[in-house]
Length: 121
Image (tube, rainbow, N blue to C red; front, side, top):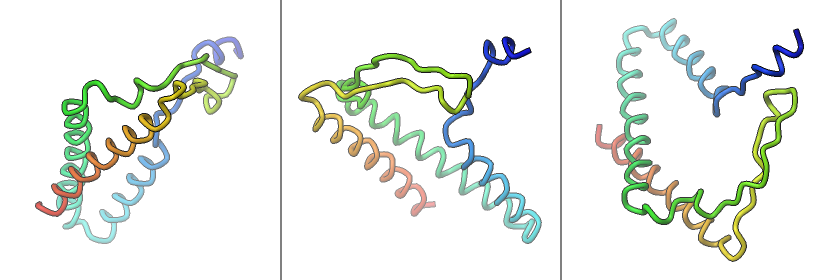
């Protein structure tokens, strides 16, 4: 039995707790104000679409400066718990500033896209 669990163990997706929180909040909106549910889902879909568009806009504008280009994957570490499945990584030497700037640039581009669509809708 334990061999089956360790062989086919899975890792929860990133931000799974936030997804559960959003589902609970949508259920609360549905319980207290059901007429606002279509508006809430519309705004959620717009913000999600803007985040997706901002991410791909960043990838298209800066194809040779992606944040993962500055990372070296050392080894993959997996224990019996799905929470302890991760990769040991290190930023390439002399590329720490480029890595930081590329991460901040991507966050700014995605945030600006989300903000512009959220304010314009």
